Image (cartoon, rainbow, N blue to C red; front, side):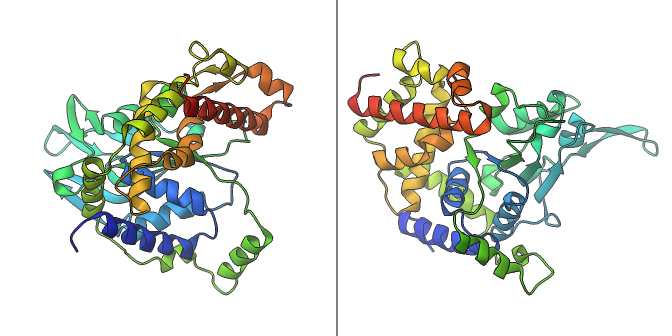
Length: 353
């Protein structure tokens, strides 16, 4: 099938249908994750244990025909289809990136490639690792390459259909034994997606029904939809062909500027620090992917509004005083950030920022 906007829309629809087999509900979250993949970004998933964060990532990997057993060698470097790293306090940077190992037989150092050499990397409970280990992902996520023993290896080989997609999970409530991600690390994620409890009693019932007569996980029923090469082709098509007109681009720029207290004084009630130009780039790329997913080659302001919270919520620093006035804690932080972004949207529509 020749790749075009209609082909992308229909393929994404089929992909989402497969994800529905393993994870009930979370329609918005699923669309944001797939859009992030098409925009060549990374995803941070936050939610309490037991709401299928890991299952959702595994389902996506299976729908792309990627598994822990599949290995593709490109230019002498072995890449796994899917890897999962369980982050713990004793995890070391070399456990992620790899290291040089001395071979007693040849009396030479050999490169041992770490789990980061994969198509899809699941960083489970990323905030349980110490900052030194968390920083091992900085180069990998931004430059999409890893340096081992003075030699740099690519994690993304687009000419061979090799992409690199990181999805990390963390529990936003439990703080004991965790190390909060620094701002530089958070900024490497295109979106932070909050996954709450099921939205209705019907969803709770459907989840129970999905597991009622089986001992294995429903993720095993996921069927392969596309080849990994399709992801690269779709990313390239969206980047080249989906347009952002001047009105929508002005809205994105005005929205980003409206989050900065030094530009828009009234936002200081909600934010101590606004977002950087990287946020505007992320908003643009993700809104283009979202437009393509609905079958359009033109981004609308509505597309931008749909993903504003997901793209910006982890990049702003909320006003601590306002958060404490709301009672403090996770829910208060989210509420302050949400209200601040809604105000920034209103300002951006008026083009005042």
